[in-house]
Image (cartoon, rainbow over the protein chains, first blue to last red):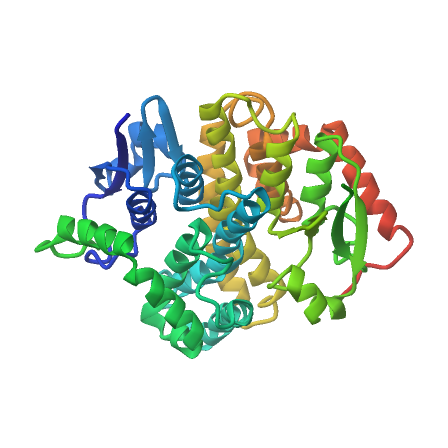
Length: 217
Length: 217
């Protein structure tokens, strides 16, 4: 059954790989699964046809035969459960790897989203300059805890897993902020993720889509 | 194998059921699984023994034999995969139910966490009064989309599932704000969750723990 995912018709970041379809592309490349990409305009995100697939009007979505999923965490888990290479075989190790998917999405990403909001939605507000360090502090607290946990290990839980894929994807959003560089082991961890051939193929595929087109917005 | 979860030694909310151990208690009650509770002081959350279980120094954790998990999403999924009553049997329906766990944690909860931060951490800041409506607007956008999707259905995807358990748990945090009441179908959805016998048992168990003790903080 062929897999179809959705991505932005115009790239908000000029193809730097920060849009969330990148997480799904990377997972499909790790799993060796071919996929097609359907592009969605910003206007179409709000229309009923897309909302039927994604109630919150975002990308990516994932279609495979009669199954339609949204949420990158759910799509990643679905792919990882059906193909080798993204989750350990052993039940307990598997549950630990899945734990890191949730940690990336519900513990590490929320302050990063808050920082993005502070910059993108409130950057012109009178409180922005005074408030930004507070929000950065919340991100830094999480990075410090993650850095302690990772230590000098290569990946979070033994071999590379779907948990690392999601954690690296979430941390990548911080690259422009410079915050990641305060924690050398995390910066190296992210670089290890980016160096994986599957990541490279996924990155090239999304960049090719937007080549020569100006970023949206 | 006996299950041990952790909870706050002193309740930040006076036992109103907003601490995250409630999500795990509820899941274990739905699954009919007995469990023990180990209380952790605020000081102990920061100590190495607890950090070994939970790298981000939070509650709850989940221990079962040699397995130790954190993140309520991961714990809920682990319970739901091993016991009847929280996920459909059919593979596609199962993936859809799991999608709602992720939607609750990564799409609906982040703006709710941001609103909590705006109130608890920035309530005394000079920008608080002007900024609060902006943050409430972000929560309201998500609630509106969720309200449209739910419509007049009882649960998000057919029968009650782990996805509803997590979504109701996340929405419950909004109760004091009054925002939930702007969307009558969501308020009724949350009330349906709270009315479940398993929720009632879990709520009573956590409230009994803090009865007669003043809230922390």
